[in-house]
Each structure stands twice: as C-alpha cells, then as structure tokens.
Image (tube, rainbow, N blue to C red; front, side, top):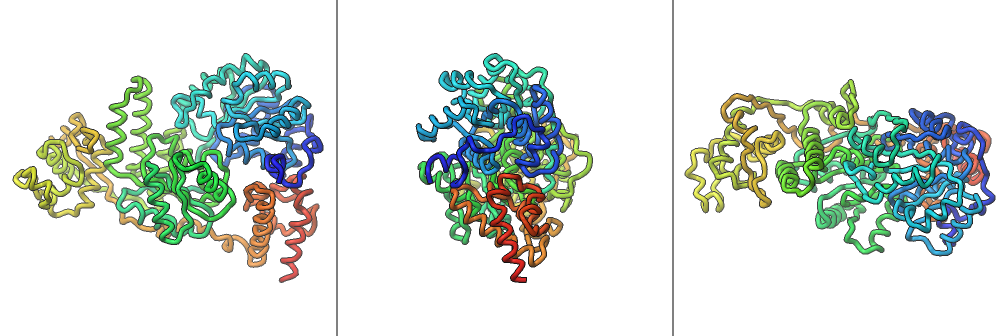
Amino acid sequence: MTSDQAQSGTSFSNPIDHFARYIGETPETVLHKVFGFPAFRGLQDAAVNAVMNGEDTLVLMPTGGGKSLCYQVPAICRKGVGLVISPLIALMEDQVAGLRQLGVRAAALHSEMEYNDQLTIREDLLCGQLDLLYISPERLLSAYSLNLLRQCPLSLIAIDEAHCVSAWGHDFRPEYRELANLRQIFPNVPRIALTATADPRTRNDILSALDMPTAHVLMGSFHRSNLFLQVQPKISETTQVINALKRHMGHGAAIVYCGSRKKTEKLAAHLRGKGYTAFAFHAGLAPAEKKNVLTRFRSGEPMVVAATIAFGMGIDRPDVRAVIHLDMPTSPEGYYQQIGRAGRDGEHSHTLLLHNGEGIARARYWLEESQAPDTEKRAMQGRLESMISFTETTGCRTQAILACFGEDFHEPCGHCDNCLHPPFTFDATEAAQKVLSTVYRTGERFGAVLLTAVLKGKMTDTVEKHALQHLSVFGIGKDKTESWWRMVIRQLIARGAIGMTGEHGGLGLRRDTARPILRGDVPVSLRDDAPIQALSASNKIKKDNDEEELSEREYRAFLALKMWRREEAYTQEIPPYIIFRDATLKDIVRVYPADVRELGEVRGVGQSKLERYGEDVIRILQDEYKKG
C-alpha cells in the first residue's frame, strides 16, 4: 500500500480531484447522499444552520451524539476548506479515513506524515481540492501553516475537544489558548467549538478563551441511557475487574484505567493468565509497543487494555463494552469523558468505578498541599468533592453526575446500580463516634488498617510496639467485621470527618466536621455496602447478544458481513467500523435488500459506500439467502 493510500483510508480510492463535489448543495442533501442519514438528530440541525449562516457556535453533546456532523456537513456545502483543529493524531486519522470512505475530500497534516505526503496536501489545498483539513493546534499556529492557510478560502473553523481550551477543563492544553487569535487572523470565518463534557465554568472559559462572546450555545442532554453506572468499594481489585469482564469475554473491548504505569502492566499480566487478550498501555512504553496495542485495538479485536487515563481519547471504536476505573478520577468531567468511550454504538455497556477511603484522603491531601493559585485550587477542590459525593451517593448516580454539568435530570435513570439495587442505610452515629474516638486516642497518625485492628481488639506487631492495647478504645468494635469498620472509616473520610495528616497515609480528625459527631449533635446515616456481585446479578440489564435481536437467518448474514468487513478492512489497513458500523450491518440484514437500489435506502449507506461495497454486500446476502 502506498503512503497516499494509507492516508486516504482506502486502497482503491480515486484521486481526490475525482471525488464528487457538493458545494452549494443543501445540508439535508449532503446528509443523505454522503452520510446516508435521512434527517438530522437533536441539536445537529440548529448547529449546522448556525454555521451555514456564518455564526459562531459552541456545541455540547454527549459522546456518540453526532458532534462531527455539525461541522462536516457545512464544510462540504460551503465554499472553501473546513479547518478542523484536533488534539490527537489518532483522532485525525480515523476521521479522515472515515470521510474518504464516504467520498469526501479530507486530509490531515501532522508530525508523523512523510514529507512527500505533506507536499501533496499542500498542493491539494492550494488548488481548492479539499473539503476538510485536520490539523493540531501546534501545527496550525506555526508561521508556515498560517501563511499557507491565508492563501486559501476557509469555509469554517472547527475546534474539536474544546474543553482542552479551558484551564478548568480536565484535558487542558496551553497551546489551545492561542486559538483566540484565529478571530483576527481569519475574520468573518465562522467558528464552531465542540465538546462532550464541560461544566458551566468550563463552558464560560471556552467562550472567553476563544473570543466567541456572541456564539450560540447549543447544549443537549449529557445522559447516556445505554451506560450502566456502577460504583463499588475496593475489596479485591483483580477479582472485581474479572467479575465485571466475565460477561464481555470475547465480545468487543474493555478499558481498565489504572493510577500508575506499574499497575497497568501488573493487571494486564494477571488478565492474560486468566485467558484474556490483555495489554498494558502507558506513556513509558516503546513507540513500537504503543503502536501495536493501538493497531490491534482499532482493528476490532476483542481485548482488554489496562491503561493510564490518556488512552482512548480520539479513538472512535464503537464496541467498547466496559470501562473500569481502579482509582477515583479527580473530576466529574474527566470521569464522564473516560466512561464516554464505552458504548459509542448505542449498545448497552458497563462502567465500574472502584474506590476506597485511602484514595479519597490522599487526593484531598495532595490538593491541599498543591502550590496552585487559590482560585484554581478552589475549583479543583469543588470538583473533587463532587466526585466523592458521586461515589457515596445513595440516590440515582445518573442524576448525581449530570448535576455536575448543570443538568437537572428529573427522573431516576433506572440503569445505575443504585436504581436497580437501592442501597440500605443505617444509623451509624455510635459507630462513627467509636471510629473518631479511636483516631483521636491513637494519636491521629495511623492508617485505616491499624485503626481497624484497634477497634477489633486485634493484637498486631504495630499495636504491641505502640502499646495501643492499653487504650480505652481497644476492642470496642469486636462485634463487627474488619470490612464493616473499613466501610465506616471510608464513608467518614468521604464526609470530611477524617483526613490524611501526612503523605505516609496517617489519618486525623477534621475537627469542624468531627466534633459535632463526637458530641452527638449531628446524627450519622451511612450506606451498608451490598455484597460485591458480578454484573450478571443485575438481570434488568440487556445482554449484549446479537442473537436476541436478530432472527437466525439475519444473524447468520450479520456474521457473514462482519467477516467480509474484517477482510476488507485488513486489505485497506483501516479499522472495520470505518467501512460500516455494526448498527448499519444489523439494519442491512433486517431490511435484507434485494438489490443495490434497496441497499441505498438503509440508514448509514451513503452514495460512495454504495458504489464501493454495494455489489459485495448484495452478493453476500444472496449467498446466505440460498443457504435457507
């Protein structure tokens, strides 16, 4: 395969100047002919119309909501090239490959391209042969790129992953702040900024940083009804991860986010020992290792990736069936962005967050010790406390997380752990007083393990070394299990009655909160952790089984099309979902078109894909039909 073919995302595409042109067509025509969709969804229509009218726009939609169409359609319709600023090469490559499959004249400029390919794109750009050009902010703001783009009419400027602009966003990138200059450099060019996660403060900062004071702000619901939200206290990380993965064995992909590079490697090795295809991914890997993992992940292979939090951003794999966090994220935006990588195909997917009191206490301690300016520190503290509240809430988790984005979700979602299995709460005032007294009597210098030993009256080397067996609190909690006391300690940490006193993990009283509890002025109600169970216990969650929604003949045809798609994708060196997503293949076998014309009426089959793949698809369907 030549470098041009690889960049274009197809081994048999025509030269770019032979692609169909749609300048002057209506957005609705482009949506149908190019993308194969009958109508816009949600806020897409309003966003497209605003850009078509030359107006600045900020679009906030959940992952999988169709943000890309909001700038791709008007870029194809309007005169000039649509400039798309994107933070990651993987994201650019996927978008360009997908657009080329649709017959759209798209290209990307980034640091990993061959020099000759860069010259080809420059020539196409200057000759008006591009509809969309993807570029990173660093590359865009170079003198060379700006000089080149000043010679070309721009139809629009799209700033993707716009939360990177904001100092309050979870993926802040300083170079994004310089994009405010685009208004002066390219006057009268409409700008559209897009993101999946931004709280009110971040939204305002995006508008300010990009100098878009009069922009339309279009915000849809952030609700993802296909995601099962589950939170569990840490008991045995690997066991809990395996229980969550069991129902996904052999289906799609899973991402397990870990707090350290060492943990990613340890977990991946353990999962491989249990029969999973599992890989570690972090910044310390050799480039060849990272490329191998990314290539296999994008290929559609069933697998588990144990990764640090950067993995997954910009990778549009639709069948990620589970996203698991082994450590609590420090902000709701970061957490929601990461779990948003699950279920992009709209199918039911599982998210699991594991947490403990030590992690909460440590996050608070390091934030308190941070040298960040007070205003930034207060904002970070507010987000951390929102995240802690989310982990310990007894109410609907979806309502809790959406409230962090300023969205009032009126009804309990019915698809989180608390909705499906309402937690039991109990009066824990006396238990809380026992724990706080033990923290105080032991000198506010020990961690949860030793505090539990003292409460249980358990002799250990440390207890004996410090003569803690002689304290009045020794053994006052003999009637409860160690895990029960750890549960109480964790929730008192979450409430702010206990906090970390040093970087070595010692716990001390936070007196403003602890004193009223000790005096009995404030009653304490805590949740009783339900027994840790595999997700299969939640039988109200729809199973990921294509056989349940397709007839036997349809399912056979679906598998045949998937096999054809895999081979076609391998030949072209692109991810299979770029050719057709599973949802489109399912729609095809449900309709079971008799010819290419009928195939063209299926949602997601645009003109270019019909011409490229129509005959192959019909042939496969006819072969399956003959089998009966």
